[in-house]
Length: 246
Image 1 (cartoon, rainbow, N blue to C red):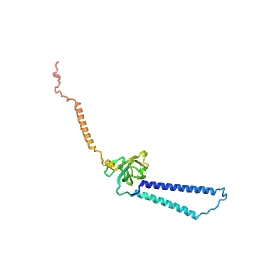
Image 2: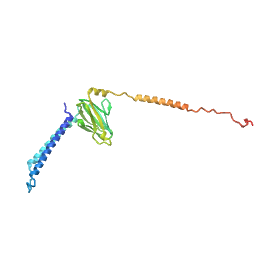
Image 3: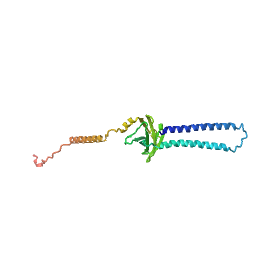
Image 4: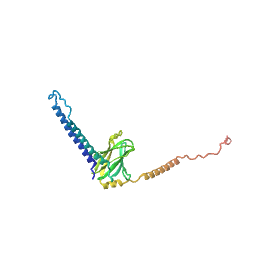
């Protein structure tokens, strides 16, 4: 079984941190020792030390070895992160100001990231506006979301629970609030959720709209009819002067 990415990242982090602490203690102790040994009180006239080839070789070779060890350990973790398992489930991640959206292989979309437990998952990451960064802190992975480009990484969901995704790239006013909930659930529950699509209410809405429109037209016609003024009948009887009796 392949090593877990989060475990590799933690091991690398603690190895580098531990090495740094040890070196800090050694260097600090050496500084204090030489400050005391070669103090002005002990040596009023300073000695002219030209160098020590053996010591110079040691303090050059040892740091090189330490850095190379750090490099290869880090490279192993990076290679594992980029080498996606062939059977990994693919989820498309799209960032926009200021939210995340997720699309599955059956075209289902969600603002919450639902995943099955004990599965390898590949994230294909993009953006529709500005640069973002898709960060899963509990899984120790982060990748930039860049418009017009698809980046990726993968994780393995080893345990059920609620986690979160965040944006780790400043992207504007509400960057601080660009979070998404992540839920890892049993495989069977995930399958039920993934394959459930709410009924399409578009057609119903259109029908209701047409009915409403037709009803409104009928009502308007009734109102117009009730407001019609009766037609005026023209009196064709001419009033002539000679018809008026004096």
